[in-house]
Amino acid sequence: MSILDRFIRTKAVDRNGELQITDAEPSQDLVIVPMRRAHIRKIMPIEQQVYPRPWTAQVFIEELEQARVGKRHYLVGTIGDELVGYGGLLYVENDAHVTNIAVHPMWRSRGIATELLLDLAWEANRRGCEAMTLEVRHTNVAAQQLYRRFGFVPAGVRKKYYENRDDAIVMWCAGVQQPEFVERLQKIELSRM
Image (cartoon, rainbow, N blue to C red):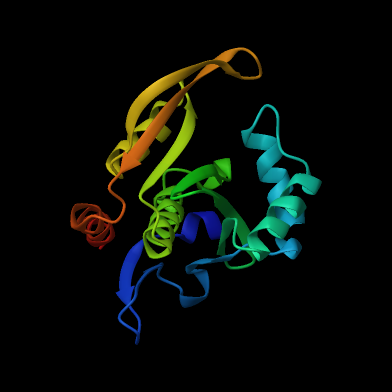
């Protein structure tokens, strides 16, 4: 049985009262940590599989340099030794822009993107951001549904944004500092139990 076959999502509360996704084997937890340069070599195969025009390793290096000075925030999700997903934020004034959320195709539909976005949303809230924004390919219905769950709503279209061919839907989530947003995130966390 492969690690992919054994990953079953359950919930547990650790000693600090934090919710954590775990599977039946303690060594197979989904662990989300800040991205480091050492992760880039494991990120690149995912990046190249999921994006028609992937970022280069140099772009990730430059983004991590911006993270060191507080202008970005990047995370990776791992299960065992396998990097299964990553995501990031770019800060612009009082807003947080989701730069990317990517999950290895073999690990999709297991809640990993939800966990990454939850951590990014909590970070935007902690940082004092008033709103979050992102672009999503108009054909990526699954991602649009995920973003709507977090309170993002369509706010416009960028024509031929992707590869000078596909339109991007611009989505915004306002009120990141409002109690309703915090309640939404808490409900999403509780739904994972």
